[in-house]
Image 1 (tube, one colour):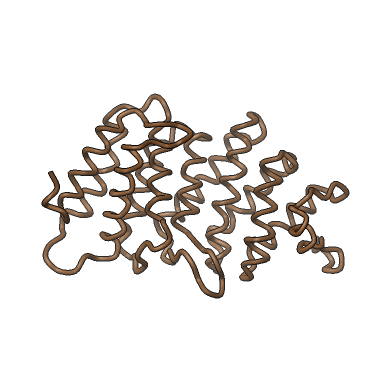
Image 2: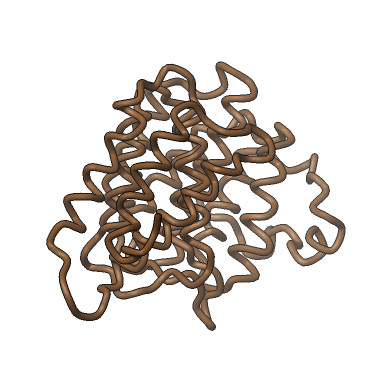
Amino acid sequence: MRTDPADLLDWPSLAAGGFPFPEAVPASRLADELSAMLVSPDPQIRDDHACTAAARWIREGRLDGVLVTLGDTAAGRFVHPEIQARTFAPLIIGSVLTRAHAVPGLVPREAAERWYAAFSAWYPAERDTRGWDDSLGWLHAVAHGADAIAAFAKALPDRRTELLELCARRMTAPQADYRYAQLEDARLARALTRVLQAPGLTRKQATGWLTTVEKALAGGGPGPVPVWAFNTFATLQSLHLHLTRGLADEGVPPHAEAVAARAAGLLRLPCHWLA
């Protein structure tokens, strides 16, 4: 059912007031309205209003009854023809999964698996990885996807090695024509560190995904550094820092030393002077 434009919420007023929850509005209608706004090419509508409100209300538990609907709708946008619709989908899924982790039972595993299937098909294959567009605002496919990776690691812990592999495939995607310029490498490194934090990973599992990176870099030679290789080296440098310093809220993950050593070994390819 389409909502009459005259019945739409006054989003500028809600934003000005810090997004108080509109108690009189059914959650199902809010889910529909938010989902429609998250496709908008207008960054104020999509990001400043819809995404900000959705993240807050999901975190506060205001939308617990429609979490699966929000997640299913977001997962369907991974094949949307417009870039901003695709790249804001992982933010919503990440918010939903984070809320579900805090309150077990809100989201059935089969729903998380559906979203993972759609996400894992999209993330390494997305061609438009620009961080920012002067008209569309933040796009951030790599960074937003990395945030979702961390959320999936908690929702589907048995998929952690696959999630590490997804990060490897994303950073080494050969079709890249955008150099990371908006701290995408740091967001990927944070996601990798959060996945590595989970207990139970063996040393082999924690380091195995770097074989994909090693194979991608094996054919390198003299000449300019390809964009994907630049992005990969930037991410490895950032990861090394994250593994050395740890995360403020979680510390240093198990096997951090082994993963950092493998990363440093790969960084000697362009920086042969490293000790």
